[in-house]
Length: 115
Length: 112
Image (cartoon, rainbow over all chains, first blue to last red; front, side, top):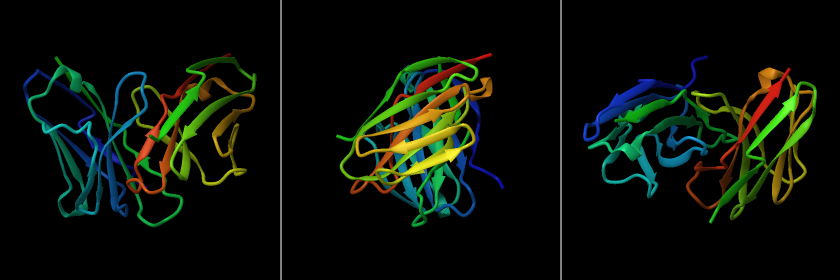
């Protein structure tokens, strides 16, 4: 049983650079979520896909952020022109539509440090 | 606005000393309340889902309960390996299907 995987696990980048993260959900899950977590806080919702359709984006997701889920399988989250405030853990989660109890299973996260 | 508040922020227990963590929520119609465990540097690990007031779920030394305004995570005779941050999250009816609203968590430390 393979869970949600994320790559890379850690990313250090300089301010102004672009970064891209990948998430592979549990194979039969058609819903995929991105969250961001900073130190001492709970995860905050960023965006959500059902299959390949991006159905909602949080106000936290500025124009520098873009997410895709081509073919409804893996997803990528890109941050352009990174800022120090983007430093956080980026978490991906997946769930199965229409099946109770709607729980989301999280990946190990990608820790981003912007210097 | 949907909100989740967890208390205490941090809790230190001696091994075997039972206690409870609290999660208070304000949501426009509860679809589900979730408890997760998070170890440092890792993603949250799913523990329980509760749907309606009066519901209870148990797993090993953990028991989660739900009322109309709050949930409790009871830890019976904890062991050092139970040390982690415990996160509570709610899923609301009428909002984005599936979006979770998290509290800030309770950092639990169990010492031998």
